[in-house]
Image 1 (cartoon, one colour):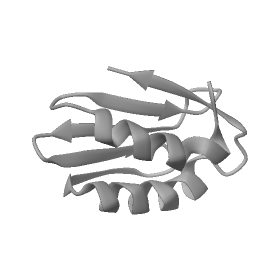
Image 2 (cartoon, rainbow, N blue to C red):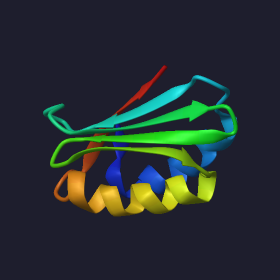
Image 3 (tube, rainbow, N blue to C red):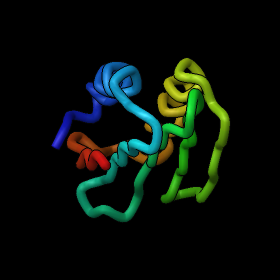
Image 4 (cartoon, rainbow, N blue to C red):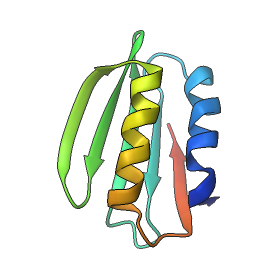
Length: 87
């Protein structure tokens, strides 16, 4: 479990450590909404699964952080704690 307010700081660190094919998944306490970040080569893929179901491909590290900042407000508006799953 991580704090929702530390999501972007943690993500910035984890994105640099990720190797090809690694995944990070952030879930709400009820596990009904999630955001998946997957590394594909030099780029990233972000999958939103909750209020909306959208996939973004070929994002840079800066674009991922910008996208997650927006998604955090949509998918986790009242969440204080989030589950973090690393694959």
